[in-house]
Image (cartoon, rainbow, N blue to C red; front, side):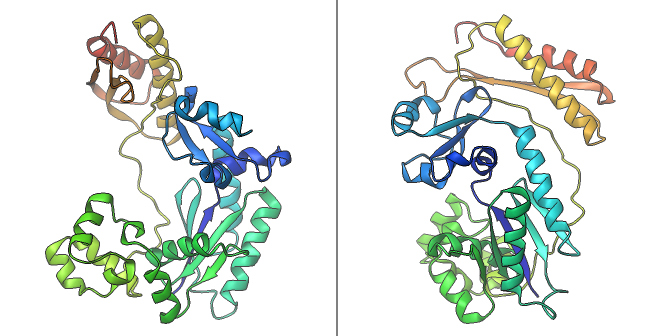
Amino acid sequence: MTLALVDCESFYASCERIFRPDLKNKPIVVLSNNDGCVIAFSKEAKKMGISMGVPWFKVKNSFLKQKGQVFSSNFAFYGDMSARVMNILEGFVPKIEIYSIDEAFLELDSLKQNYNLYDFGCHMRSLVRQWTGIPVRIGIAPNKTLSKIAINEIKRRNIPTSVIHLSNKKQIEIALSHTPVREVWGVGRRLNDHLNKVGINTALDLAKVNPQNIRKKFSVVLERTVRELRGERCLDIEDDISSKKQIVVSRSFGERVSNLDTLKPIVSNFAVRAAEKLRSEKQKCSQVSVFVRTSPFNINKPQHSDLRSIELSTPTNDTRDILTAAKKGLLPIFRSGY
């Protein structure tokens, strides 16, 4: 059993570099809509101390002084580039799961008898880079969790080819021993703290625990993770992803918004975009929710946060119905002076 995880390197930043070759090896950050905070960055920007979600105003001056390049997000462009990458990958394998805009799991079971999988991964990476300009990392392993570990190994060891195949027990154990348990797929901060308290600090520590004991003390989900770390496959490729349960359009504003006349058209625009997404997925909704909040970074000023949900009489994807509900939801939660 073997699969691969293809992970686009610094995807948004790599997209911006496609038509700007002069930005090679230059630090790049990409900002959220309205330039509120950093949502992506290149490895050069990471070395400068830039972190995910940091408010742009906090790092702007120092970043620009060091000749960093900044871009407002262009999600239509990123989505198009993602589709190009995924279309190329689909031509290589019989089964693929597009996990996110910049990640995909590939089923390799039917290929391993006829190909050297490491060479196959290098060929895929080369072709994706040649045809799209997007660099990717490829981690090959027996299952999804270990393929995530493989991607971490590429980063940790700075492997020049950006491809690794964890093909035997020794290679896997070495990779697990260098992986903090907090970096294991599905282990969050809270769970990491609980595991640390019982002496589980690395992925290898977790792999050595009896899965049934993990199930009793924690959950069946963590038990599956342990089994995957031990080489079993518990999570199959999902090539038929179910429909979304919700669609969210939200932004952190680059400028302070303090009056209703400014906020109304912004929320209306979000409602229009949400309706477009709804129709593109051939779905309908029965509820529209609107939320507002002040900046959590303005700790010395009064804070306000509220949400209102409007139930629709019948499921719809009509922009007019969704707009009406959004306007109705905004009025009672807005507070002047914030």
